[in-house]
Each structure stands twice: as C-alpha cells, then as structure tokens.
Image (cartoon, rainbow, N blue to C red):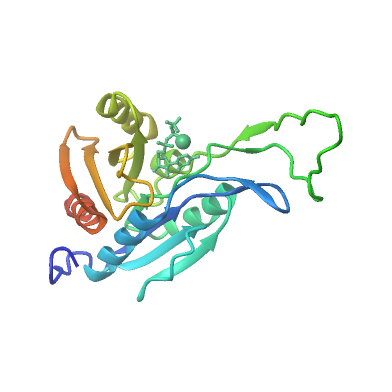
Length: 225
Ligand code: CTP
Ligand code: CA
C-alpha cells in the first residue's frame, strides 16, 4: 500500500465503489464500449478494505481478479450497473462512482447478428440515453449523511467543467482527471484535482492510483455522519 499500514478510519463503514466501463450490446457479438480499465476503482476498493471498510465493488467488464476481502458484483450494461449500485447504496455510508457509464445505448438490440448486404450502406444506429446513476444517487440519498463521490475525465477547461459537473450532479466530491497521454486510461498512475461541494479543491500529484484512492478516502472520512 502506498501509505504503509493504513489507519482503520473506515472501520464499521460500508462503502460502495463502481469500477470499469459499461458495454451496451448491439447484437450478440457487438457492443458500444469505452476504454476504462477499472484500475482506479479497484484501487479505491482495496484501499477502503485496508482502512477497515466493508466494501461492495460493482464491476463492469474489467477482467480484473476480485480483490481479497471485498464483495464483488459483476455487471455488463449501464442499466445493470444502476440496479446493482442502487441496491448496494441503500445501506452504504459512501458511494464512489469510478465506473465509466455509457451515456447512450442502442435503442434496439438485434437478437441475430447484424449482417452486411451487398451494395447497401449500413443503417444508422439509433441511440437512447442511459440513466444518470450518480445524479440519481446524489439527489435521492438513501441515508441523509451518505457521502457521494463522482469522477470526471475532461479534456478542455478541466476545472471549470468539473465545477459545473459537480453542481449539476449534486455529489459531495468530484475527482477531475485531465485526459491526455500516459494519463488515466489503462495506466497505473493518475493525476487529478478533487473538487468539493463546499468549495474545497485538493490537487493530487501524478502518482499511483492507490495514492489518489487514499486521498479520496481522506476527504470522505470527515464528511461521514
Ligand atoms: N455517471 C453516471 N451515470 C451516467 C453517466 C455518468 O453515474 N449515465 C457518473 C460517472 O460514473 C462519473 C460521473 O457520472 O462518476 C461523471 O461522468 P461523466 O461522463 O464525466 O459525466 P456526464 O454527465 O456523462 O457528462 P459528459 O457529457 O461530459 O460525458
Ligand atoms: Ca458521460
């Protein structure tokens, strides 16, 4: 662990972490997906367990082995992720949405493989919106003192976009990553700024995803009821 022997400051707490990226099926062999590796969510789950929490990890398409001492729920799509997160959040002290949730899913699922036809252009793929899980959890807190954390990967006006997103989602903390080379996707390391609804701004220098995870828990702990 990045910080050696962890303080058991999450003992007696139940935390829910989502990790990975949802896949939205088009037909039995194809899906719309994203590049989330799940490593940041897994680091959050491991560090929370090391700090004494009971951890429910809701995992989408990471292929990573289940961390020891953590309850893992495997899901595929955004709709399945929503079901699993809402269920686990009902008795959680904190919910951290590290998963990359597809904003859209195909409007229709083809039960047979979509085939190309000679001389024909492909039909456009119609998409519909997925539910916004973070906004739903934030506005309908299962417990008054529940702490809700979101993640955002941004490319331009990173902090301004982050502030606006924090407000729009209604969460307590938002971890904002600047997407760029060697950062975020698939990497072992990360750099971020954690924005708080009370105006706080905590920069986290480039380093292991475990360090960012510990900083998130450091900010969650004093906000727990
Ligand atoms: N999120 C969610 N449900 C969705 C989309 C996103 O719960 N349908 C969560 C993510 O897990 C993340 C946070 O919301 O914690 C921010 O995701 P992001 O994609 O940055 O936010 P969006 O509102 O989808 O904004 P954008 O249009 O920039 O993608
Ligand atoms: Ca999005």
